[in-house]
Amino acid sequence: MRVANPITYITASTPLGVALVAASSRGVCALALGDQKSALIADLGASFGGDRCRPADAETSAVVRGWLDTVIEALHAGVDGMPRILSAPLTVPLDLAGTAFQLAVWRELQAVPAGQVVTYTELARAIGAPRTVRAVGSACGANRVALLVPCHRAVRQDGQLGGYRWGLERKAQLLAWERTGR
Image 1 (cartoon, rainbow, N blue to C red):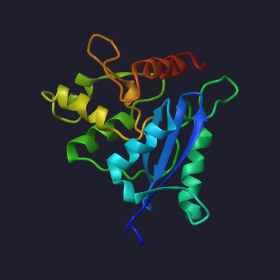
Image 2: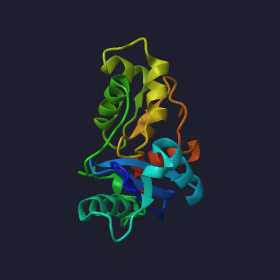
Image 3: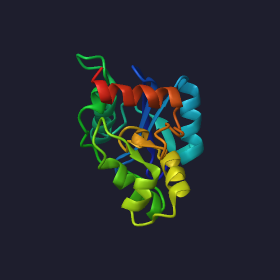
Image 4: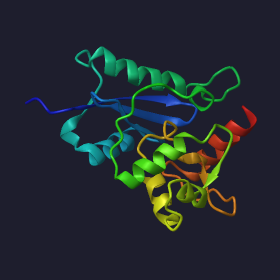
């Protein structure tokens, strides 16, 4: 049985832990970080429907495989030990699924330069919805493409980290790498 718009994924060990990168025929739809490959695969299946998700293989289109490989390569450390994805934005297409509100938050996050942070309050103001600070935080938490939509750059008004879908320790490390370049 052929599945409409399948989700193809690969996993790899990276300086950020285990990474899972998934793509549809429209673009990268997931970049998840964690400690266990099996948990990341299970979460992918729960998010997109397990029958749609399959590991990359010889049948994977060259275009999709190229997107997956590009992201995995950029997750590996450069000369300074920092994952290359943090210092140079990737130009892979994204297949983002969310509400209009979430998409607005994610677009705004993509404009935040590496090494800088933005508060949830500033994000709410930037999208023209200043009373939606909690909803902005929820939109950050719903982001399925870590680093490609850099929700790790969103912090609380008091400068504290707030939450991070892939763990606060990982968020702190990402921000430290971006600030210091190592």
